[in-house]
Length: 119
Image (tube, rainbow, N blue to C red):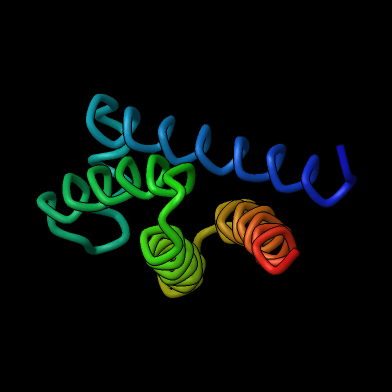
């Protein structure tokens, strides 16, 4: 198996796991409800975001290019927005860096996906 394909599967697996874990946590952990309030978001946004992340985690594995592209775009917007939200409320660096690290994994997944799609 080529290195590009291995990197794609590992990073896409990590992304899917992170988004599915996030979906579960958003829907079940009371402290995340408080975190959304801290960021200034309404509670319904937490539920919408949980559903969107779960769907995106699944879409990353569906062999339909349009669905994959939409998932990558949506997750990119989500992760950039998360970093900005944490900066805006003055959260510590760790809270800002977490979405940036996950975004780096997402970008790696996307770049390797595109390399594999072209070949």
